[in-house]
Each structure stands twice: as structure tokens, then as C-alpha cells.
Image 1 (cartoon, rainbow over the protein chains, first blue to last red):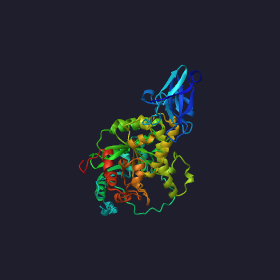
Image 2 (tube, rainbow over the protein chains, first blue to last red):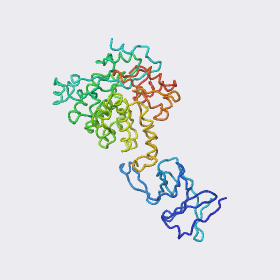
Image 3 (cartoon, chains in turn brown, yellow):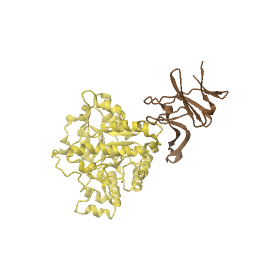
Image 4 (tube, chains in turn green, orange):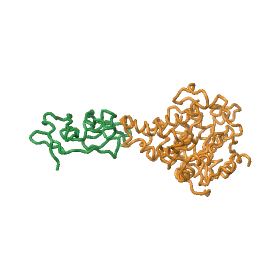
Length: 119
Length: 365
């Protein structure tokens, strides 16, 4: 049974903002991506860097669809680990570099204006 | 015949052998009848012209003077296959390994066309035990692509040779895309093979920094193979041409482990520079890259060569090549001795090359 933990008032977590909280000894980053909340562990699998302290922006991709030219995409939903620059999609937990690596994601709800993460 | 006795029969291996690195010794006189005018006149000239006059070394190398004379006829080459126990041989050029250093584009393209005609008509016409790699002219990718398409369905042609020595820019440049597209369409692997690399322009280093053959040989082939590999990875050759198979010959195998592991590390931190990749670089290279064994390197007391290969391209992507008739060629026995596991030996000495070049078992056709 998950327990809800308060993260912040929603006015403190506007789109583009994030907050790191510690719950039961586990650090969790909660992000507002375009009005939707996403929560992931503040831990990069690569060398255990503080992932959620990283910058949020977009990423570059190139495929047959782009004529193999780099294209900027997913602006605002990619967090970059501040240690070695691994990128993760906040909306899915998917690591951009490694298809088999996906972060655990925690449910987030808003009750009476309070953003809560469920663990 | 005398020339084939250079390698004694005792060097034969029990494994079914394919030699993927045999060299012809094309001369201007060989190619002249196959060469378009006006360039045929250059080959008929008594003066020795490049690439034959580009020696690649200016120092006495003290190589043994009894190096095997090259095979001048298919019969001599077949006798060499028999003497070494190989069912099939893949023929590569000699002097034209330095084709990439020629500044005269039309001459370079004419030489490659002449070599390809000569190879197909004089050496691999029956498409049986002797197979060949046509030469691609880096200076004229459109012409090279047309040559690949021309010979794509010839049974004697099993690969496309990409000269490495003197090539500028490196093989990752997008100007070479037509060559990769043609090779992929023809389902022919490309073979990057060096030759006097460090001494020719285009090498990513200063030649004056390497004064002796010891220094030049230790650094030239591995460094330049690595430089070309990194260049190809950097422009996304592997994901952009997912069916392309790339063989690095003449560089040994140990260099590849370094570049593979290092590029995975750089992918981790600089993925945005190569956004063509959706997985680590090694995941692509282990599907698309093969290594020739020459020059054979050895393991150490506490780590076998098999271990190193597993760490790099994988046992399934290494193919034996002797580099005969050059003085520093490797025998199959020498390669067999350097490996520690029998399954590994069988794959490297024959099975892998049969799959890569679509060669049948045995000596029939």
C-alpha cells in the first residue's frame, strides 16, 4: 500500500520547476513537465550521480525520418545527469542512450493544492 | 612450383581454411591493357609512376630478402592455396593500396577501373576458389559506386576494398556515402586495408614524429584504422547503412578493443554529438564490423587472445588473413597457436570468412 508524501504546494511547482525530497531515506525528484507531474529517483544508474539536480531541456535525434540530420526534440522533458550527461525522458523514465534502461517512476497526485508523491 | 614451397606443408592447419588477405602484385604492364586512354599511356611509360613510385618507406627495413615472390598467375595462387591448405582466397591489391594518395582524380579512377577489369578477367573469372575485392576510388565516389554496381553480381567478387593510406578526408566523410550505399545494395562487405599509411599525406599524425619502421608500424595501422573507425562512427555510417558490413584488415585486433570501449564511454557522455545512435556504439559495431587477424598479436600469460576478442568485436567477427606474399605474413599455424580454444580457431580460420563472403564449404565453386 503506497503512502502519500507532500512535496510542495502546486504554486511552488509550476511548469519547468522541480523539487527533490527525501522520503524514507530515498531521494526523489518531482518535476512539472508542461503541467503534468513526474517523479523519478534522484539517482543515475551509471555512476550514482544526483540525476534530478541536472538541467531540464530537450535532446538531439537523427533518423531516416529526419534525413539523418540532427533535430532538436522533446524540449522540456529531458533531464541530463550533471555528472556524465546521460539523458532521461521525464515522462517515461526512459534513458535516451540505452534502450534497456528505464527509471522507476512514482505516482504523483494533487490534493487540495498539495502535490504528493506516492511510495 | 618453387614459389609455393616458401611455406612448408607442416604449417597447414587441421581446420577448414579461408585466407581473406592475399595480395596480388599488379604492375603497370599488367593493368595497361585494361586501362582507359589517356591513362593507359601513363602505364605504358617506362618511367615508374605513382602509386608504384610511392614506396612508403625510406629506411632500410632489414626484412628477410627471401620473402615469397608473388603469384603471377591464378595457377600459382591456387598452388599457394593448396600448399597452405586453404579452400578459398580473397585477393587484394598491392600497389593500389596506395591509390588514395593520388592527387589526380581521373588517373586514380582509371587505375581502379583497370585493376577491377584485370581482377575479374584474369584472376576470378570462374568465381570459384579465387575471389577478389574490387577497388573503390575514394577521390571519385560516384565512379566507385558505379564500379560496385557493375560487378555486384559477379560470382568472383566478394568485397569492396577501400584504400586507407593517404585518404583525406577520412572514410567517415559524407562524400563517401554513395560508396557505402552501393556496397550495401550489392550486399558486399567493404574492406579497409592500409599500406604505408603513416608515411603518406592524410594520416592523422605527423610522419616526422615516427622515425623508424618499429615506430611507424606500431602506430600506423592501428592508429589510422582507429581514426577511420571513429570518423565513420562520428557521421553515423553504421546506423545510416544498417546492412553495411565493414572489415578492418592489416591493423591487427587489439586496437579495436580500445576504440570500442572508449567510444562507448564517449557515447555515454556525448551522445548528442552522434544522435544517429539509439544504443551504445558497440551494439552497432559488434553487428557490422569484422577484423582481419593480420598482423597477429598474442595474448599474455594471464589473458588469452580469445579473451581480448570476446571483449572487442566478438569471436564470430574475426577472419584469418595471411597477408601473403609480404615478408611479414602470418601462417594459419601461427594464428592457430595464438588462440587458446579450438572452437575459436575453427571460426577464425574459416567459418567466419565463409559466412562473411558467402563462400561454400570445401573447394567446390
